[in-house]
Length: 270
Image 1: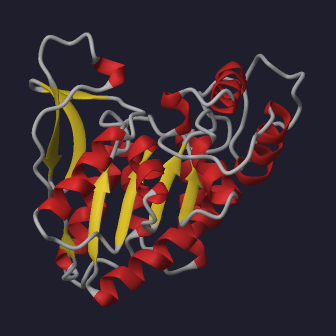
Image 2 (image 1 turned 45 degrees about the horizontal axis):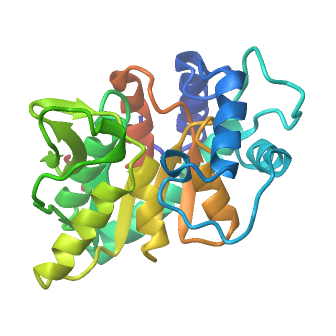
Image 3 (image 1 turned 90 degrees about the horizontal axis):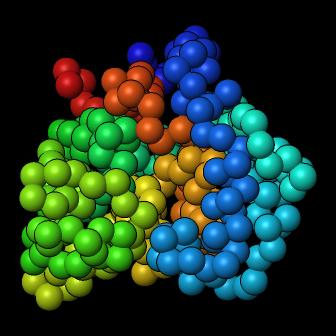
């Protein structure tokens, strides 16, 4: 699905709604409200590595999510379904596509990572392949195993693995869902210790995206409607472009997103 025509955009819009990547998503309203409260309380796994510049109330976060994501602003609505405005998703995807095209034209150094290996990994892998084919350097960093708060009870230490250019948190042979900011901090420290420059651009989600933006790097991020931290960071002026979408539908449903997003990034013949 090329992203170069109005027909292609209309087809992607229909696909986003049909697969519930946007529109009537599976993320429940209760999760949206609960996680907004957790972020307001600055619980580490819900701030995604961001050092918020001011206090936020639950009502302010819900209002921001309504603006940036299309969810309900009503603090009294705490149950039932919620929605992501598909046109907000498309508009953010267009901004990401334009930035990826510039990265390809400039042959930038790009770091990719995901905290959702059962969902968004597929989209990130396609992005890494397109950038590499365009002549970009897809940054790969090796760091020693380290403990993380979310998975501290595991018998095997957590570590970072890079799959087809995309960094993920793992334990043994298992890939882990994570909100943790620590993995990307370790990667950036590893780059600095090796005398390598920081990435020009980061494409990520969850704590990978938040901690990278907090470090001053430009980030293209994906976030579900129950993960408000990246939207708050974007609103506070961090170098974040955030796409609202369901981040854990079946991986092959993101293929159409990748085809549209990477139009003009993939060289001809790829």
